[in-house]
Length: 544
Ligand code: G1P
Ligand code: ZN
Image 1 (cartoon, rainbow, N blue to C red):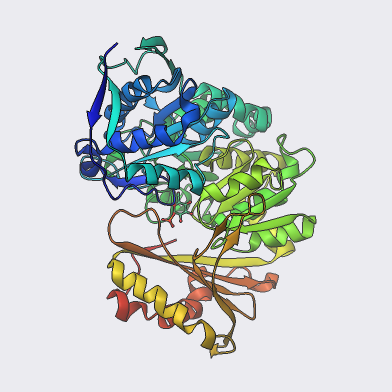
Image 2: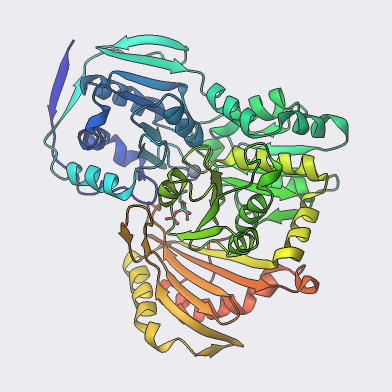
């Protein structure tokens, strides 16, 4: 066995963001760049030595190359066994499922999620710990610290593993198992949902759906589950073959980037239900006939109806939402008499709450929903949950939402994203808002009175860790909110996100256009932060 010890010097930009380390492919292709980060991960996670590692990615450009490098480094670092998805493919939720099911010591997932892929686009790597969830901050910090002092890495000299053939082989002293990427995940879904009821929905009447895999990782999962197991009409899953560049698109399931299925719900002969997932399969967008379900509403509806699916026969213990997510879920929790936790942005903050069973369902406004079945958000899970509900309720999607709003009230919601903004200008904008905190409460703008202005900080109720500066909240006396945050996943400049929400309890006023209802708050948000003057932008790049 030929293990090489390669001399290297640290890179100073390997601190993981909201979801792992994301950079341009070209950055990862620099000599030693990927290797340094992987070695730092192995060094910071001594339990991997002699243990089992799960490895896979969303199939984007550089996925296969990176997997071969990581396999040889894993072998050189004493990992006993690595489980790899066939073709290097594992969706993020499937990786989480496999880490848990085989009681492994963690996993490396290669993905830049919804960011575009290709030689000039993005790549990413993240480490998930043994509960299947994203590494908590203390782990990512340890990896980062190690990356700043690294002097060498270990790698085995060996031929590539055949990633396309399922089976077991050896790499040095390490066992490599190439497994079916879909099977374990599909088995889990079958336990959580009423597959016969969904099968009946597809085969007993006129119900039609379309799932857009956006040329990304969920294609094989959705084909197997939705078409083969649940019996949806062949062709119900579109763009189902993962491509290295996602067909040139943004694999981001929102109204801006998943237009193909938006169109299919608005055309002359619309489908009853449509959904899409992102690059690595953890996000989802839900649409009905001529109807868009905001992710915040989706979370609230799933929580309110959880008792109707086999996974939660006696309901749920609690709910959590990320801070910028609308407060619709809070109203459900209140009525159910359970706790609703408000956490910082990023799935990693849900891990402790899920592990301690304080919550069973959680979600983010950024098209992320999930439960305690894995420790990642899960796009296809949300789609199956909705299908199960539709099968039980026998109502169109729009009707489900309208009935929900009647009971709980409606939280109108919209998000404005300003991408590629100058970093310093974005920081200055945030500081300008912070400087005004003291003066804002009590001030009135266009009929809205500010009740509080603060910078969100969170103390984890389980381990007591404190995360501060997690986004600026401006709350109004009628329950409306404006939230400002800088993205932690972008790779170019800064992305300013402005999240807006307004509560409407009156059923007579719950069917208005979101853009119309939100217009005054949008104006207040732009004026308060001086967005035009400070960023040079007259309009956002994306509105969701
Ligand atoms: C974004 C979303 C956040 C999500 C993350 C990973 O992070 O806003 O909710 O958890 O992607 O999918 P951001 O770019 O805002 O830091
Ligand atoms: Zn994702």
